[in-house]
Length: 163
Image 1 (tube, rainbow, N blue to C red):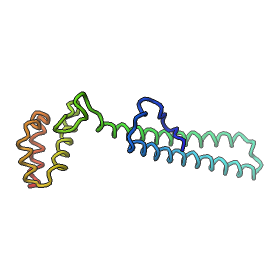
Image 2: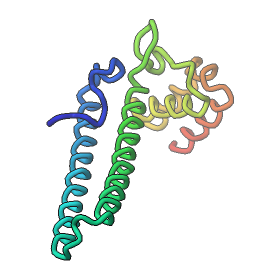
Image 3: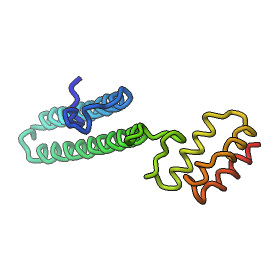
Image 4: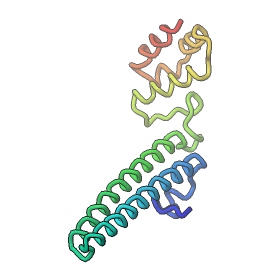
């Protein structure tokens, strides 16, 4: 399969993970399907116009241009969606000189307070299954108090609601 939805030689995309490459392949398949459908539609149009002796009409040219424009818009939407997915997937893989961002080992200080809230909540929900132990561990987490700021109490109340 030739991948031409994005340029994989671009340094930004040269070191994609296997999950990201799967996203690229799925987007490329979707693009290939759109192009094939457009070609089939243009071929059907040509046969229809041949059957009516109007194949040399400018109407066919205008209609093919309309089909191409619509297909290009759909391909652009697939490409934009792919770029969004790649950026979102890469967000969790970033890091600094201390390694990849992980709470509590290396918290990402560039996140918004709401994003920090989600990171800390996910950390506690994924790593501690007992609701009471989860609440106790969170209550003793001094990093969370400074990392979350005003959202600390909100998360405390959320975790307390599970007890």
